Length: 131
Image (cartoon, rainbow, N blue to C red; front, side, top):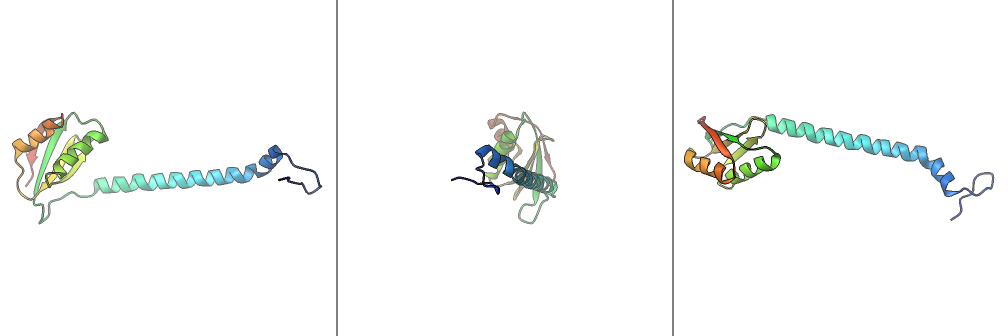
């Protein structure tokens, strides 16, 4: 395909690229702005969900907080969460505070909870029964 300039001369690929460069830069800028907006929305939604109240209910009337030593990343906290969810509990793990909040239908057996944490390779520091 040959591109012809208004004066009748043939444009080289470099001249075509230079002609479209401002348009390409504007498109790139808009894509970057959209990507940043999406990332900010995701971060804000995660913060909102983490700060939401995690309280007992009629279905899960008991709350226990286990302080855990050795959790250092999201993978660690997800392993703790999965271990207790598998047992039928509602769980929220806070990596910064190094604890797991557990809602249960019956009081948690503290020895069993301690063993669960140890089996994952972590150390249960303290178990606090809230209700």
